[in-house]
Length: 257
Ligand code: FPP
Image (tube, rainbow, N blue to C red):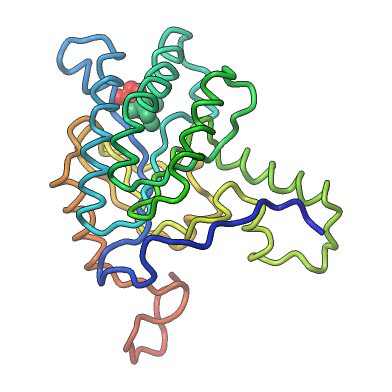
């Protein structure tokens, strides 16, 4: 008997809209550059980046995206100067408080991936409260990756498997996935990183194996509905093979995918 949490089975839509990525995961990059380009302190960029979340959630709902996962703070971000860390953490706390009513009205179900351990108990409580309050919403699942690192997530899963004394012969991909923070989320279809960067930085390393990737050439505060639409349009033109052949392909040999 394992201690894996019960998963929710009510998803927003069973049939994803054609050509629309069901799950988009974004690495919000370039807040600092956005501010510096305007001669402002970096923290202004985080402010603008936080404001941007509201319009991207709206745009995602309009596009029919069912799962939106935003990387707000990585386990490595603790290495930034203390005042910047403090700014980001307070922005997250304030936004949860300020945006919760609106997110709830929009039908967003809030999720968190990462560790709440070691955080200010008031913030951890606010995250848990927001998840609880929105748990029956079904228009979009908004996951905040916060104090999240991909390797940390995998290590956490391995430790829990060992604690549960799971028989190694029963461990397969499906069982392992149940031990990840994302146990109730589908794998991302599209990963977007802003600020023209091409790094994954440990974002969803297990889950992203067959995700399509898009690097947006604008900083996060400038990534609006049009840019999200463009990313979705690029995705719609991609041919996904999941290691097999392209649908309808007659080629005998294809590039590994
Ligand atoms: C990357 O830009 C951005 C971050 C590390 C922080 C993102 C956090 C927020 C937008 C706040 C999130 C709030 C909620 C409610 C989820 P950067 O500072 O690395 O930019 P740079 O690469 O230009 O320096």
